[in-house]
Each structure stands twice: as structure tokens, then as C-alpha cells.
Image (cartoon, rainbow, N blue to C red; front, side):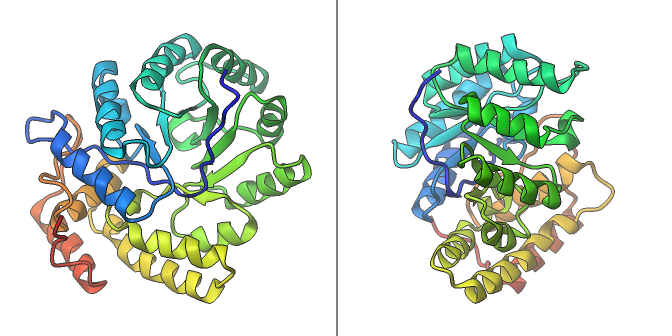
Length: 313
């Protein structure tokens, strides 16, 4: 395991994966998207997460996606990449390829499909960390993994130096607040990022190091302004920016009757296309696309917060 741990603090958007109409990766749009995010002032890039639809891609596609992100980024901000697989041996193989492709750190979940105890999950992370030459992060996303990473487990792994940080997508703000306090009491062995993008101001006030907001793919500048205001203690500005972002975030409530993957990422992609950030709003193969009515409603939300006409980049 590498001892060098890049700082992931501030706005670290989970990079969406633009696709062509035939569901292959649109590398030109992906390059343009990375340029947009970095130019907007983000502090890092979170590749191959849920917003990036990583579960729908082969290992070779994942490597190619990361290579494009790394090339476009050109070392300007650190990249953390998701090695999301069933168990430690498969995660290690994927993680090593992603490090070779340009990842500065790796993030992974508890094992998938298996039925493990917290002690076994701890050994899962220890095994991965010992086998890769990059810092390892824990991705707490029980809605997808169906296992919650316990507070004691995370602090223990942080104290041991097994994990460098936690990306919390649990939706459990009480639990995250407790993790912040426990981390502080333990001497801050972990960096802590929240994925709960509608309460970023509150999480930063509580002590989070940063945020991984999927909606930053639609408009990153607002999140950067929010973080900068919080960093200087201007909480009125931070709250005002959060409220504006939340009005924009209404895009995810426009589609109805679709799966979670189709609704959230579909709304982001429809908005990104409307803004001119990507060429197509194509979803991963087998995921239902938004219908024309939902797309029109998404555009209406963007117009209401003055994010249209389309961006010129």
C-alpha cells in the first residue's frame, strides 16, 4: 500500500460517463466534461462511481474511461477511482489496472453478494489495501451494497492506516455526524466526504472535508462557491448557494415511474445535454431513458435557475 495519500477535500464530483447512441463511451464528450469540471475549480475527480454508471461497464471499458479522464485532467487535480467488484481478489485486479491508468487513490465498497460480518468486511479492506500501490478509501453506500459500514469499523481501519478516508453515501446524516465526531476524537485519521448533496452547507459546518455531488456534472461552479464560502466562515452565502443548488436539484424529481439509476443519472445527463456539456443523454445499456416530457421538465427547471441557454465550451 502506498504511504502517499492525496488530499481529497472540497468539491470532488463523481464524473458522469457520456455515451453515444449505441451505448459506447463518448470519449470526446468525456474529455470536454473533465475540462469543464477542472476549469470550474473542483478539487478532485471521483471516477467510476454510481453517477459514472460503473456497474454497467466491462473492466476494459472502465480502464478506457479512466484513461480519458486522466489524460484530460493532466495531473491538475487528484483522481479517486471506484474499483467496485464482488470480492477482494477481483477488486485488487481492477484496482491495479486503474492505478496504472492514472488513479491516485482507489475507493471500494463492502463485498457484494456475499454475506459477511463486520470483522470479515474489515479483513476485506485490509486485504485490498495490502495489495495495491495507492491509498484506499471506503465507500459507504448501503442502498446498493445492502451493508452499512459501522462507525467503529471505519475508525479502526483509519487508525490502522488501512483506509485514508470515507465517501459517505449512506443518507444517514446522524451517522455521518457521529463519524465526524469519532474521527476528530481519534486524531482525524480519515478524510470524510459526504455524498448528500442537498445538505452540503450543514455537513461542512459539522466538519466534513468535502462533498461528492453528482449534480456538479450539471453545474460545478455553484458547489465551488458554496465550499469557498464555508471555508471562509461565510455561512449566509453558503446557505444561499445551497438553496439555489437545491432548486436546480429539482431536475431529479421530474422523471417519474423509473428506476433509481434511470431517474438520477438520467436527469443529470438530460441537463448536461441541455447545457451543451455532452452530446447525448444516452443511458447505460438496459437503463430506461427519460421520455420527452421529462426532458422538457428538466430544461424548465434549468431555465428557472438561469442555467440555460446552453453552455458554450
